[in-house]
Amino acid sequence: MFPLLSRVAARFGLRPAGAGGRAAESDRQGRWGEQVAERELLGEEEARRDGLRVAGRRVKVGRDEIDLVLERRARSGGPGRLLVFVEVKTRSSDAFGGGRAAMDRRKRHALCRAVSRYLRRQPPTPFRIDLVEVYGDASLDSVDRVVHHRNAVPMERRFPAPALARPRRRPRA
Image (cartoon, rainbow, N blue to C red; front, side, top):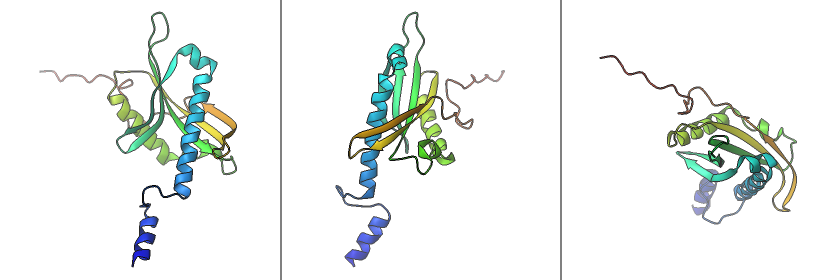
């Protein structure tokens, strides 16, 4: 009886805490890729010049998650405030299309939904959604290459962002 329950639990992803396996390895690889992407993004000359800083890592918004949120604060005489939402795709190789190919319609939809929910809690702010592909091996801590795609994911129209939404007109009395 118990082996049957453990097989059913394993089938639906209900493993005891601390259980290893492919899911744990994938999560470890993903966290490593996010760290590499953060170091790479904040190390870019443009990011240092713009004053980007980390506003959040693995930000949970409803049932969705944003891997990395970067923020540029408004400075006197400089550019205004900007939010950069970063989706990180970590792969050992690009044999199956790479990270950009993994951003299918369902994942773009979930990311846009998360960004829209995040922006509802903010004052109207310009933003962009970037994609960072990290190729390498977490177990060896070896990075083959990092590819940064700016404005890689367009915001879906069904999710009006406060920065883009028009003010509602009041009905005339």
